[in-house]
Length: 482
Image (cartoon, rainbow, N blue to C red):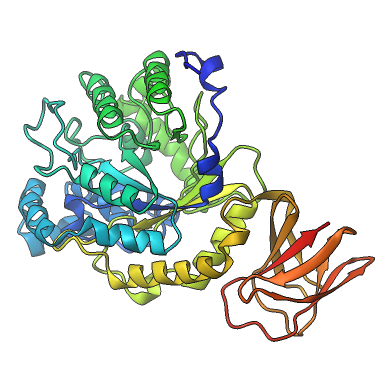
């Protein structure tokens, strides 16, 4: 099928089976900001905007926003930068980053991701600082040579594909501080900082270059898109006609009159007045992007949907509060393997994927051990229970409980229902309340492969494992149907 640059044609693009089946991907935030590895520690990004609105953009826990944070004198990052780096230009981190590349082994990264059970990997190719991880031939008119000398994108793509995983690219289309270096403090400043002028053509050319050069399975744009709707639709049609089984995310709200107005300081001030009041009174859990005219999947950030969605979606988050490497992270800042797996299972049961981030160090191109440990724990669980995850689809309902109150999530495939217990009942028997499956013929504990006894009752299915399950973040049982 040849796609046309119209909403009717593009919205007919199906979400490919590979993406539906994958369930788990790896996000990589790695760049010049990974050298200082510093950000404020005032809680989640949502908490910062609710409690420190006037400087929130410079006080988020996201280390990848360091380039902006050090421009705001009252920020903790600015003080740190002066004390530790003596106020050096941000561009000076480039030499440290390039030195660290001497230790980079992309095949080792890919091995760790594949062992964790990931089916696709999305690499940040250009973040808000504008620095490109590939030797782009699209010249930046404001900062000459602002690209890596090595083709880090190509090397990562080769390593990922060698392990049988799909490769995708992230691109910061909405923000580029090499085009708009104005210090940002508030949400109004941030939204109003999408560059105009020569930037839309630059972003369009770079994304087209990424598509032609690497043929990525995912193009994951961030924040917004700087061009009007029609050029954006032209870009989508080009992408789908180049890589038919590709997907694009939801952060593609095109340029509009409202966006243009938000570039004006007086409009930003009005916006900030109401946004500050709203966020203080109505704290949110994370970031929920606005739905654009076209996308293949939604991307809630550090939050999830509470109910099963018809539209495919992808939860995205770091293992701690930041995507980029944070040298200040301690063990207490990271989610446990148990918490990550349980959140993952909840997401999958509601028609979502998980894009779990790793933030390698910039000084030596190594993934911190705390992150590797969590990838290993994730992989161990998926190795035993992945049948109930990969290739499944949501059941007629996502959630349930056992008779003694343990939360359950459900996934399904033809002839199979998988019950995922987000905990362990106090007894050796447990009832899957409300599960009416008269055609059930067999029940199996996935981790051991052993059959368990089952009894059909009027109020559900009673399972009686023959032995106590070994400790696990989530216990999965397969119910086979006649």
